[in-house]
Length: 285
View 1: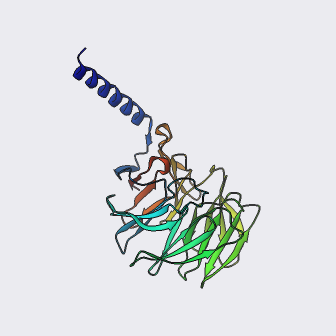
View 2: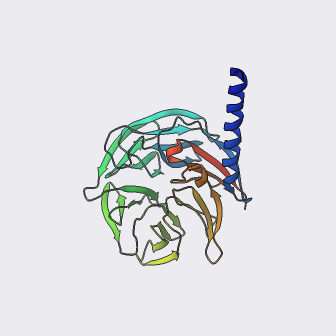
View 3: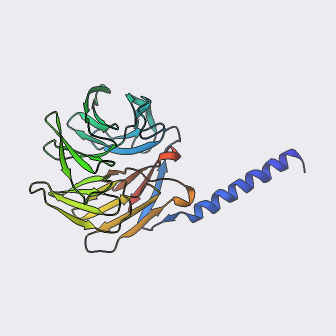
């Protein structure tokens, strides 16, 4: 067999294996794959889409999620997945959850919260959280209250008017991760369920049981949730209805970390962690 034919056979075999792997991926008819970014990203953990700026922000851990190595960064992408600036903001350790209030981007970074001026791309301030171990997700209410989950200490913190305080600690929230606000409730994704907390009364109750470990949560259309489990599974849930699996990329070992969402166009953005990409899907409901 000549060299050219040998190379062709190898390429055909690789293509066959890739197709076989893709066939194992589950894609519910309710979603449609749109695009995937290049793999220049470095351990992308969280995605936040800003409609006003038509920009996708991506937090890049770039290594160990718990290591203070100062090599984490934030990227900017276009709505169709092109990288505008890979290292838009540098000087972070292991950035994860993000949220925007007014002209500032807030990002968790292990045991501190970074406040970034979006126009200049400069870090304005770090809010240190001395007792924190693994700050993860962020969600912001209409008045600027910023809620932050600490996955290792089972605590929800709140940053408001420049002050960080312990807001909630309960045995009912084990391994809190993904956060979203649904009406007057804060929803918290934990190691095994989703719980809801009344933002005014501070009462806590179970919302959806037996979810397995949760990474990202998206609340939309008043009563719908999309959540991921990091391994590569994504689900759609509505209170009182059966939970539906939307996506399973575990056969390809492609993760599904902290989700982003275009609420107007119903486009889901999935950071793939070790796969170093963001993938986008159209939700068809």
